[in-house]
Image (tube, rainbow, N blue to C red; front, side, top):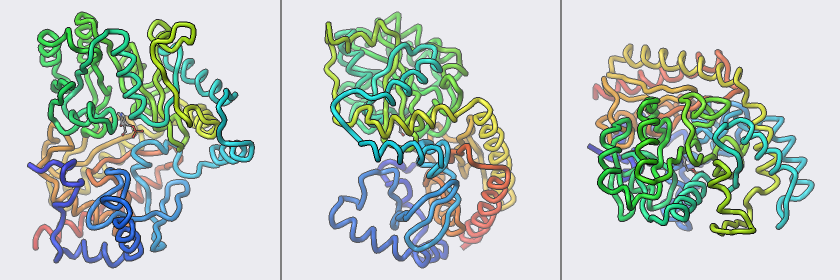
Length: 435
Ligand SMILES: Cc1ncc(COP(=O)(O)O)c(C=O)c1O
């Protein structure tokens, strides 16, 4: 087994003699040069593990609609949309207009602004468990803040999360995505209520909060069952812990967040990604009884940040959330279904094993007959890496681990095009597997 986290996603990919890799290198010389320069001043040549892959990641010059354009002048159909955050694609005109207008009117000050009210009002109107919200600059910060709230309320120090869950790039959460328990992190298997109950029965009095994604995102696009979510919430409450639902990714799945779909009301909700309209963002929302820890008259949690609720993010996010309508969500879901069916057909046609995890507008492709427990630890790392490079060679951009996330500006024709490009990439992979 190879962990994609420790391997940088596909360092185990095709050997140097690989025709796919040879083509990739030949097509991406300027990206390679930029990566080499980047390595001198940034360890690993990047600041984001998820935008790194071997032998070098693409450097993107600009992005528009459904397309990315790299520094070598090549165009890619973007099938991951910045890991779900660009829910309306790139440079979406209404968001560009709102952000441009705001940039001309100033980008930050240490006082309130109208735009934060508007975005907060929309979030509160859409998510029924959320009475009030605090903004941060990333989903990771939202996780840290939610954990701080839970610690203050319960007086406890530890957390429980799903093995291969992901709540941000923070040591307490990262151990979980690696599948390891940390000094303050307990793990239990996703969708295994008995396992969560057992950990809570044994360690409940140390646990401040249980964190769960309603759909494991980076873990491989695996939806929870409603019974699991409800059972974990009840068990958390029985143990005196808070139940925190991480909707950083899953907010895009329903107008009221995924909690509406699963009919579950968490104590706190983490938000991020799509609610920033393509700008850095995070948020924690919840019932007033929990959010009162920020009440200046009786302050329990000190929370500040130079760019929290900055007017540009708020203006862009306000448009992004307003334009993420139920109709548009339904269209994305239909297109993702078509993409899934088409991918399965195409991989089978190439004579390779396949399975696809799919929920809403996201999916994860596997080159194995059954999807593994997680996309992080899997048997098909080598062939996935080959496909990733081959897809890039054919102008198709997806996550190195096989994840895809659609945007509202995609059409049926884009899915047809994606399947055509994937088919060409799969031909190359099938030929190389024979070598
Ligand atoms: C479910 C979930 N929670 C938290 C995060 C962290 O958000 P950010 O990358 O904005 O720090 C992510 C990001 O991928 C996520 O998918």
